[in-house]
Image 1: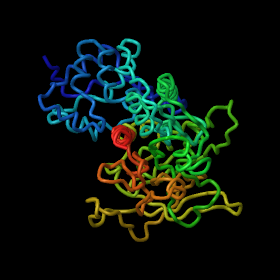
Image 2 (image 1 turned 120 degrees about the vertical axis):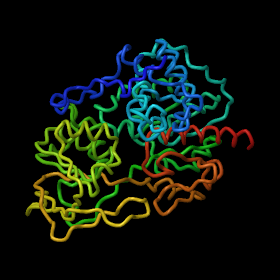
Image 3 (image 1 turned 180 degrees about the horizontal axis):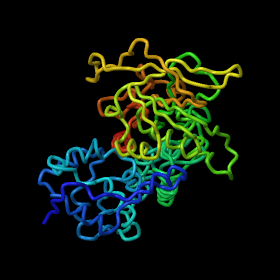
Length: 462
C-alpha cells in the first residue's frame, strides 16, 4: 500500500554555520529507511507522467519500486538502462522542473523525491547491482567525441555500448567538462565525476586531454585520422559581461573564471599554487545556479560579506530553490530588484564599490515575464572589492570558425537539422549547450543520447 505522507521525506544536510566554512558535500543523502519510506509514496501511476519529464526517459516508477522493496542494486540497474550518470544527476538535475513537476503526488502535496531516490540508488546500489549490460564487440568503426561534459560522456557511453571505438577529446587537463570546472565540491564531489570517467575508460573509451579541437587539430584533421563521425559537445563556456562603466577594474571577473580556479585548479586548497583573490566583500550578479555556486564559494574562501544582485524578484530566480535556500542559510544576502550600473574603483584601479539602481516590474516581455525597469533616482552604492558576473554564457566560436560547412545562429550556437543533433556538415553532430546555449546537465545528456543513435544510423547508412 502506498505511503500517503504529503511531504517529501526530509534529507539531512550539514549545519549551515559549519558548511559555510568547509567544502564538504552539503546534502547527506537518504538512509535505507528514509529511502524505502519515500519510495513507498510513489503510486506507480498507470500513465507514468514522470517519465515524460525525464530527458533520458528513465523508467522512474520501476526503479522506485525496487527501492521500496529494498533492492537498491536492482534500482540502479533500471536507471543505467537509460543513464550512465545516476550519481551525478541525483545531485544536480533540476527534477523539480522536469520529472517531479509531472508527479501526481504533487497535486495534493509534494511530489515524490525522485532526485534524492536516484542519488540513493547510485550510492546504495553500487556494488550490489548486476554487471552493466556488456558492450557490443568492436565493429571497427571510430567515432570522435569533442568535449567530456555530460553530453560527451553520455554520447561516448552509448556509442561504446553499440560497439564503436570512441575517443573523447577534452581541452582541459581533467575530464568532466562543466561537471568538473563549474560545479563546486560541496554540491558534486569530484571523486564522483572521476569515477564515472574511469568506468568509461575501463570499457575502452579513450580520453585525450589538453586537446583543443580547432587549435591543436581541426575537425577536418580528425576525419583524416579515420573517424567516421564526430560529435561536438563543447558546452557554452564563453562568459557574458554587463557592459557597464568600470567593468575592466581589478576585482571584476566572470563566474566561469572564478569557479574554474576553485573547482578545477583547487585554488581553495593551500597545497595548490593557483592564485585567487579572497574577497573582503563580494557581489555576484545573476540569479541562476552559477550565481549561487559563486556566492557560496566566496563565503567558503573567507569573504566577510556576500551579496547576490538580481534585477527581478527572488521568486523569479532561475536557480534551483534548494540552492537558493542553502545560500541564504549560509549567510548570502539576496538583493532582489537590484541592477548594477557602474563599478567604482580607486586610483590604482581596484574595485571599491558598485553603484546599483532599484528596479520594478514593467510590461510583459517576449518570455511572458514582466521586464524590470529602473526606478528613477534610486541609485545606491554597495561597498565591495570583488564583483563576479554570472549573467550567462555562449558557445566558444573556435570550432565553427575552423570548420567549413558548420553554421551557427546569431547567439553562436551550432545550427542543427530537424533531428536536433545533425549539423549542417555531413558526419558532424552536436548537442548540449553548444546547440541550446547554457542549459541543464540532464538536457545535455538527452542530446548526447539522441546523437549516439543518430551517429549509429548515419554510419550504418553511409
